[in-house]
Amino acid sequence: MLATLADGVAEATPWYWWVVGFGGQIVFASRFWVQWIASERARRSVVPISFWWLSIFGGVLSLAYAIYRLDPVFIVGQATGSLIYVRNLALINQARAGGVG
Image (cartoon, rainbow, N blue to C red; front, side, top):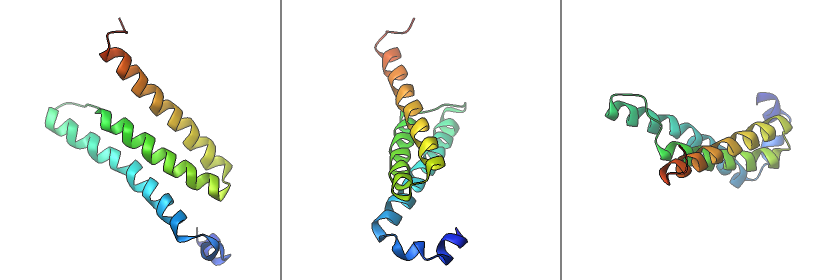
């Protein structure tokens, strides 16, 4: 990051992309707080639905920033993760509907 800032890329990045990038990281990180609080309340390890929604929202924001930055490593990581989060929500909805036996 310091090399990037020294190269002047920071000045070329519009402020709203910084908001998207940092916003994605904040949303993505907040899912761990949600999971921890839910587990403490239940007195066992649980993963609430909001964990997956925060994962998707934070992942998509981070993916948008990665695409803007043209960072293939970050793009592949966030795209793959987002697909997994969506699949987890689909499995949860399927189980709630009685479709998993």
